Structures are given as C-alpha cells and as structure tokens.
Amino acid sequence: MNTTRAPRRFDSRLIQKPRQQPRLQRTAWGFVTIAFWAFYFYLWAPLVTLVSWLLGGRLAWLQLYEYKQSVDPFVVIALPVMLVCCSLLLIGWAEYNRLRFSGHDRREAHPDTTREEIAEDLGATPDVAALLATGKAVTLHMDDAARPVRVTMQVLPSGL
Image (cartoon, rainbow, N blue to C red; front, top):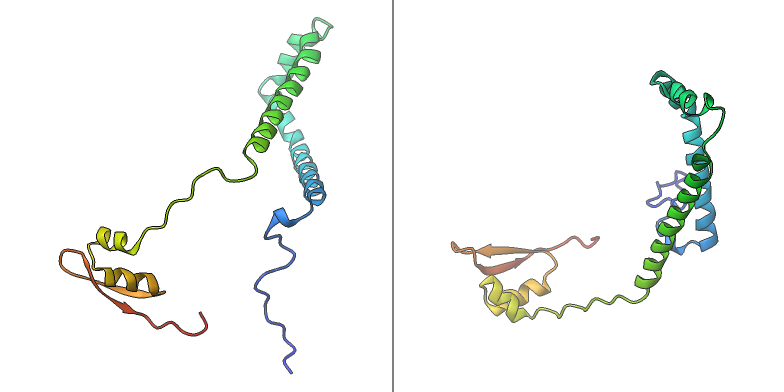
C-alpha cells in the first residue's frame, strides 16, 4: 500500500469561485482585509512623520495654526464633511451602476458562422471547412497562395 500522498492539484483552502461564498462571509473577510491594510499603513506612520518634519511639515503647522492660537473651523468641520459627502456620492454612483447593469446580458448573441462562409473566407473547399470543424487537432496544408488545400487529422493520446 502506498502511504505517500500525491500532491493535490487544487488546494481546497484557496477560493476558486468567490461568488459561491456566502455574502456575509465575503463582507466579513473584506472588513478583515481593510483592517489589516489600515494596520499596515499605521506601521508606516513614524516614517511619514519623520519625512514630514524633515521637509518642514512641523514648521508649516506651527505657522498656520499654533501662532494664531486657534484652529481654522473650515479645516476641522468642512473638510471632513466634504470627504464624507464625496465618498457617499462615489459609493452611491457605484451602487446605482451595479443595480442598473446587473441581471441579464443585454448584448445580442452573434449568429453562428456557417461552414460555407468559413470555406469562402479561407478560400478553401467546403470539404476542408467541414474537416476543420470536426477535428480537434489538425494539420492544415496550404498551397503557394496560402489557401487551405487539405487537412490531416492528428491522433491525440487517450488521456487528453
């Protein structure tokens, strides 16, 4: 008896079709992802602060706000309100488009091309076009004018 396990072709821990996951689970993992990205950016905060101080960010803050001993109400109130309004507008527009374009596909299906049309476009006989349609793996032989003249069927191994 063979005790070694064959390597698995597909790892069941990887999600191949995320739309088959429950919506609540997808949403929860989305929030987990956002939390880890926020923590990642938080880890960069000391470096950003150092670069800001080296480039004069602390001096700019002192001259704009500390010397007047007051904080501009526009910065404290209006900018966060504008940020929330813009994000809500963007999310609303995305949801509107998602609802508008979800459901059935409104594009028309293309009609199938007949074998006669294929033969005419290739400059071949209808027999060659029929052989092309029936073969899975074929070799197409061309004449000097690059027109198909005959088809040789390839024999595929039974495992494919």
